[in-house]
Length: 332
Ligand code: KG4
Ligand code: ZN
Image: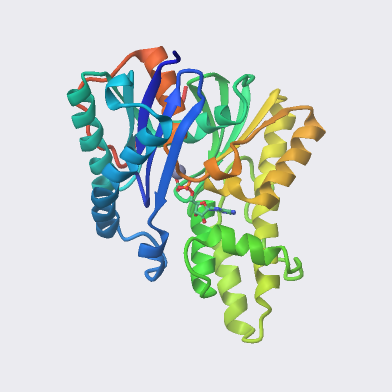
């Protein structure tokens, strides 16, 4: 029988558990979103997130095991996100993972959430070519990297201010559209047009990104034009974001000619980005690697894949690790 591990993800506002085979088959993936809890505040409230993780983590793990049809004692390892993220939220997942691993007498492996997102492409496509150009676009990050091989990263550029998900969330909050902003702005954008021509910050400046000025441009426009058409604001904002992301990705494919293009992180759930990425990959003859839409946003299945990869490359961790809120990728 294929060996399976239990993966746990609690770095932000999703309490998630998954059972993943060594062949990356998803035997179960359960995600309990705390969106409703944080919606009235327009963003994640760390203390509320930690408390909700404490309440949800055990039932979510039980559900994942039940869906996989496995008892804890039949598992081969536990993988858990150790950072980056909210310290209290991470702590809940780590403490739970350690006690389960100790109780079941199986190894534990800590996973970098960003490596989890990068590993999410294996959930769509088990044969993943290298080298890759990888765009990681989430609520906390916006970076363009290259991976010459599995587990080795080179940084091409990242945002100098807001991440793209953050810009989506702030613009949505300003427009009174709730949290998270990505899905709602995408939906509205599909019904409007890019008629406002918002700036495309740093479009021609290498590989770095900036979204704070774009967000301010949207806010200034809305303040000046009380009769604004919300669908057109959304469409114009999304078009500006996409133009910037796509320009950087094209530049990287032009410069490095990698055979694979990975697009990962919560914003990779955007239907607009998925279509545009497909077009760019086709244009450069690269294979597009993108997680299934439901596994682009935070989940534990991607942590499970990264957990198997880390176990294979470096073996298990001891019990000494703790939360690392500012954990980064190590660049060569
Ligand atoms: O990866 P993720 O779930 O959490 C972090 O690691 O940060 O990303 C969350 C971000 C949020 O900012 C949310 O607005 C954005 O992903 N997002 C989207 C979509 N779904 C979620 N952005 C654009 N289009 C979407 N459909
Ligand atoms: Zn994430």
